[in-house]
Image (tube, rainbow, N blue to C red):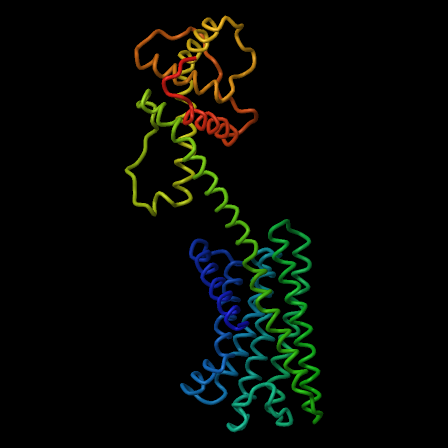
Length: 387
């Protein structure tokens, strides 16, 4: 179950970052993060029994184990590069990234030579069953482990430093990454101790080895979650805004329809409608929402003298004094219907205007809330009722 979850998380993260990189191919930190996830995604199937058997059958025994570890080295190196590019200027970041290639290259070379020197009969063993008394096997695991511990520790240091420099949600994602890296450093350090003990001939209980591996397996999904968390939060906020604008667009439909029938010439220029996918795109929904709010407000401004006349007629018929406070949405809806009838009949309008559904604050969204309240009231108001 854990393997399935990890595979899903890695796949989603890979698709997400590749799509971002396509939009911003020159973004160095994004390049590093994408390469990090690519290496992790390539390493993951090689650690499964089916993937290891396939790779070994295509090339030779031990190929899966070697490639898995080389991709892991690439994963932590790419993680280092992300922070080097993120906290340094481009020139310094490139220079330090090139220097970090030296220990990576040496470790990869040592691991490859050690695997080649390992007897073929010993290459198929897993880490838990590998005979560390064979020098080539011990060198293979110790060399890879030392680089992983070094690289992860450096990445943890820069993660903690960078997390204090930025705000949410990026800092939250970085703290998740820091927790995962701390677990990885601990797991890798413990594994190095076990490697040395087994190299010297000591017997390490299998449950201890499995526990260290489990700690690492739990840290990897947490690490990937930390990478995708900031983008996930931003995307969720975008989806919520899209849903809010779409819902407000629909609420404004009764008001917009009534005003559009009275003043069709006020409609803003619009392109030919696309398919349902185009209508559901975030940018298109936002554009339609803003257009509808503006068109509703323009229509109310033109109809305001007729609303003032309807208000005057209502006050005269009731014998009450003119109201000082703004019209409530229910009263404004009744006056609006009367004003629409007067406009359609060609009656004379008042020389003054009445403010209707005026926003209580700044911003288009507050204006939209007042217009939506009027639209809701207009939908329930009796169509033939006069003020």
